[in-house]
Length: 68
Image 1 (spheres, one colour):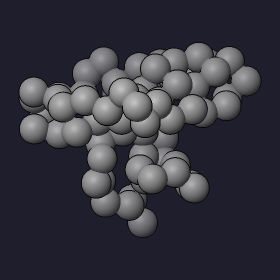
Image 2 (cartoon, one colour; image 1 turned 90 degrees about the horizontal axis):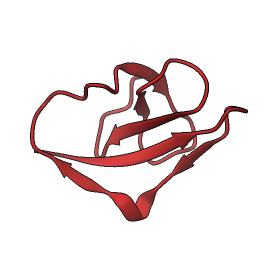
Image 3 (cartoon, one colour; image 1 turned 135 degrees about the horizontal axis):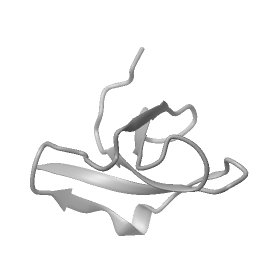
Image 4 (cartoon, one colour; image 1 turned 30 degrees about the horizontal axis):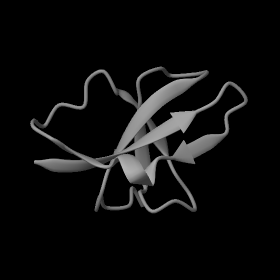
């Protein structure tokens, strides 16, 4: 079971972490969140977005290892 943190990306590319909405995932699949973006300056090293570009909802696994 993974703990996931929701993120929001706005039309202008601004990212917001919704730390008060952390939830547990029942499975290993992150679908429909399949578009990966590395993060810098955030607690999680990457986020998985539902849409590749533009406004989107995303999730980031807590405790994930940095991509570097």
